[in-house]
Image (cartoon, rainbow, N blue to C red; front, top):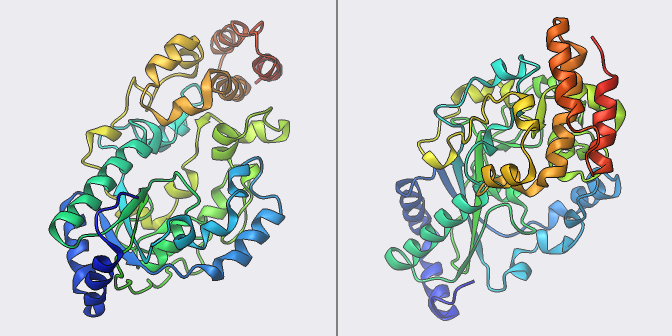
Length: 370
């Protein structure tokens, strides 16, 4: 956290926000800076500990050991960043202007589906840079403060903080929902030593709707507001390092990096906004590429074409693992012999890959048939 003002200065400034005027000015500045929503939250999150720990104890975090580490710091922001008195929360839209229709690609077994948030530049970098500029602008134009920014990069309880900031409610798929924007946005935070007036919590508007639960291809949403990451396609294609459970492979379809199904079906996303940011526009045709094309990328090509992308984090081996599963699923529904022969040839090109992980998934895929 950059030291920009003494604690005494920050306390004096923060004490003036009893009317919410300071928070309102920060919100206006954030909207002018390009964020689609801005709000302020207090740091009382102790009530989140029991539910979070129950989720961990159930093993629903899978292999994500970072979800276990630093546990108490998640609900104690002032221990994660000493001096923190408030959190400024922001939303940043990411749905690209030019991406091919998501449902169209999901319905085309030979094409690769990449979650729409990952088609362009790595959101961690884009959001972090924008948060840093916003925090500095607050310091220079509204109130001196000390801060630290977070963009899905530390033990931060993003959704509970956003709820406190009045930016929406938690949907049954566990994601943040906003009445005016749906859920197709990133959430970021600025931990600050300013004492800011918190937003008013938003009412929940899911009602009896269960569309997100019903559409999940692997039934990962085991109950409203309860996700078992071990069954989630996003977890399996991004976080999971080993073999994908055989029983889940046929359910993954052509999804090779992430999954948007629970958001695509959500009625509130009819209000989702397309992002004006070129950073999130598709790169290298990833919004509609064929599985065979992407499977042909060697490691050098993969690293080159995913430079600056969130996709790069999974590495070439897991990239091939994911695509092999999708090719097997495409092979199962191949409409004719020519298509089947083409898909088998693509898979066979990696049958002797140095990685046992890749070879095993290729072998499984080749066993699939229409």
